[in-house]
Image 1 (cartoon, one colour):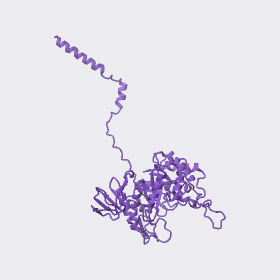
Image 2 (cartoon, one colour):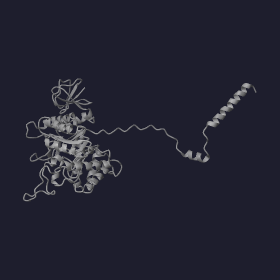
Image 3 (tube, one colour):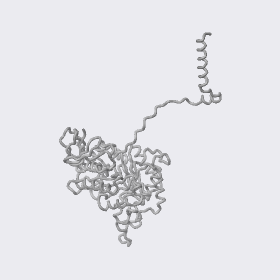
Length: 467
């Protein structure tokens, strides 16, 4: 054998030896049997991330609720709910607030030991893709002093245990949830308008006072004091967060935050131990009938001065479509819808709820409360009730369409001659006066009629402006 062939043979044997040495040892038969039963790895493409749910920023107070304790779905309530859903959809509304004095009645004192009404409410809201702010507290949130002279629950442990059970049922964490729950509440609001309750005289032990009774009502200012409300707020928030650490907790809506008495009540609440840590946002109400936005500014600026770092949700606001002042009519109401919404967002509000959706059917005589502050007009049509959208409803619908689910943190009022403009990522809202168009603006939509104009010299509020 030549030297060259000898060298090639040796190299080949070395290569074979290296391969034998380095290859993995073959498992014994028993192990080979077990390995053969294991599935081969399958490469799969990761699913795209789920789109994060973006909550709307405009809603309706009691848009889905039925007034009156214990109404539930009795006496034709089901058809009323369906009509309300149709009206909400017609406006594009995706967010409602449920007060504690109306269906689903989430007040401890009126609890009947059953989740039936609240389950039905949450089921309808979830299937209708509505975000819900639920008001919860020890007493029904309207005219609390009618029910009791003692605001603080006599058994706080029982009250907070009830709060825990309610939150556990609707928090959507998969533990003790309502069967078929679609969507948990957007936020929990603890009680309603405590500053208003504080300014009325409480009934004796919850009973109406006989004029000949020697017992006198508690003096105004002594019922549901800021200290008492703060105790309930802190305890309720702790129970909510123990059940759902991710829950958003709001203070009760302050009715008179734009007035000195309401401002001082809110200030006193915020001074109480644990209150600021107990809330994620302050809830405010804003009502007026004067032809300006001064009440909007006072309401927002009072709260921002007291708690500049705490977000603000305006859970009730509106103006009437009828009244004693000469300017109060449906056209004025429509203009003020945009004025209020734009003014509140310009002052830093994160959410705004209009009060209310529909007029109360029947005659227009006697006390009507907020019956004419709504977006739909009610009229009797024989034995049935006819609802027609008001100009205010048209404006609200278009505002929802333009503002949509934008982040209010990106909104800002910009200085302009002739009126007021709120700048957003999608365009500008002319919410007051007749502002000159900002640079780059081309089209102006009349928010009452929907008419669009190209290159006008100015906008007349309420209007939406785009590039």
